[in-house]
Amino acid sequence: MKSQKAFDAMAAGVSSHGAELVKLGGAVFQFVISDAGPEGKFTLDLKNGSGSAKAGEDEKADVTITMKDDDMMAMFEGKLDGMQAFMGGKLKIKGNMMLAQKLQGIIQAAK
Image (cartoon, rainbow, N blue to C red; front, side, top):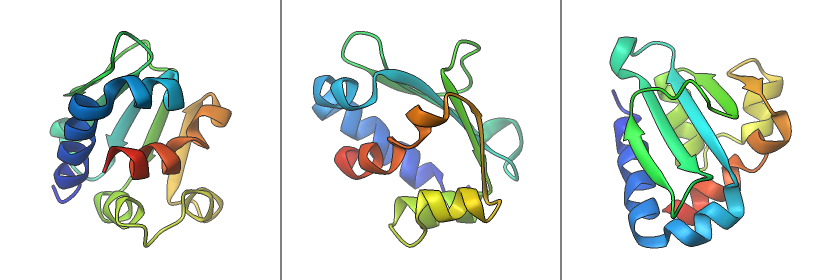
């Protein structure tokens, strides 16, 4: 799964800048990589404590972002804008859409 690189970078960002990212995010983000099978789920908790990042899912996620592996990597690398991905059907959102709009800034801050 190519996007594992993105998730590893976000996890490292939470480890080093967790408190800052919690202020930016204020939510639990669930990522589902639709073409990666069961291992394609990742949770970014920017709501509790100083944040956390882990493989797997969280039933209480505030927003769930579903996209394909290549599209997730393109968004992480800045080659695909989140709003364009959403409008083009490459990114699906379940839950609080306003929180999903914070995602691009969070990804950049976590790098």
